[in-house]
Length: 129
Ligand SMILES: [Zn+2]
Image (cartoon, rainbow, N blue to C red; front, side, top):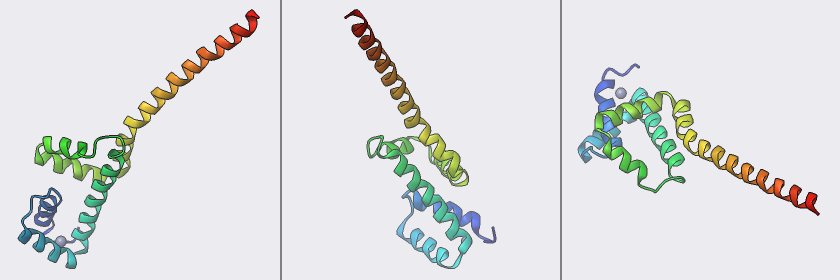
């Protein structure tokens, strides 16, 4: 990190991404981002991780599910969560994918179990003739 005001702008980035920043604050941030590669990279990373999470969660859940859940999480925890997902994008993706994947595995197991039942039925029917 080679931005002497990183902490200040990091907090402002959180505020902007939460939609809580005033237009003056947004202007201040965009002015700073134009001249600071460190903060610009940090902003892009957080924004990407948010977009990735939204993309992964939207098809499986109601459109406002993520927003509703995030709204119920206290802001400080929300920021910590966003920072964590930005620092660990692979783990975050795996965690988000784990839910639909485990459902898919569960569904596949049920399906193959019912296919096995049907197969047995066919075998028994053939044998009885
Ligand atoms: Zn900066």
